Length: 325
Image (cartoon, rainbow, N blue to C red; front, side, top):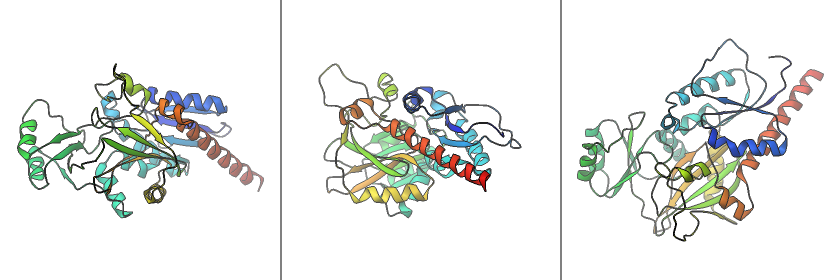
């Protein structure tokens, strides 16, 4: 596509999650386009346009009727990478987004502790896994997002009863994780945000209302999937940005994302009563809570837009230098 101006391309399948990013692009006057990948064609003989490609494909895309969006995105990213295009959150990042197993293996390579986890396919295997871990334990989908499949069980027999009921919903990839339950002294999880491979901020999330958490504003009106909404009773904010967060885990996370093709991500951990830290989720399709950001005066989507704009300028300078040589 010679002569086509370079721009930022956002690869996604959820308009609602991209709205704050559109506003950020507009405020910085950045050229961008969106590739909505729920279905479509991929011509492997076609040369992709010049630009920066930001992959925001979500592990939960199938819950919005986009069953093969992640698979299509994997093909698109392979195509872009073949032509050496700048991809933020590349094929490796997508692999980690759609597989908790892959996440935990990669985290372990960097000495980052995760909860004891057994992956199981088939109901008999799930029950066998449950009998080999200490109760209580939780289940979760291997390919998840939005806390899909996360349930707390007090015994293997309780899981067996659930599996025999209509309430059981299998993971879209058929793999369920049986994971030790980490008892935290407070109902809080912590999420560490990175943009451009650099630390942005840390947010604490109150889990009192349940496991299924999502910071995006759109989730606050869809409590059936993402109970982040405000109750009628006065309550403390569920999302609170922590100022001056300092912990060695931040540097470990930074090295982990750098080694795995991840430029933008939120990584979640929980701390038990002994102060031991367990990392349990890497979200490469990270969203931000507007109320918490407004209170703290920091803004994730603006940081992302500025970073992508800088990457676009960098490749444009590189292209101009090559032409001049």
